[in-house]
Image: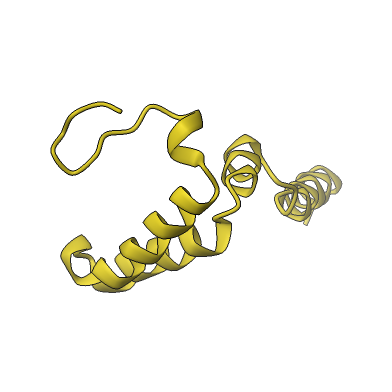
Length: 84
């Protein structure tokens, strides 16, 4: 491997190490107080590839969302489709 190739490889490895820092999306999710519930819901969908099979996880996420008053700080709709 040439010196230039080694430098590029080290830069790439450094970029991967810095990937553990929270990005804007992570910060937004953490600020809701429902990061774990969001991760569980996302994991469920990733494994099952069908949101309908993740109803339990969705209900847990919704309960957390309401408990943390996130429905008041964001524009959301209730089950009837009407904006709150």
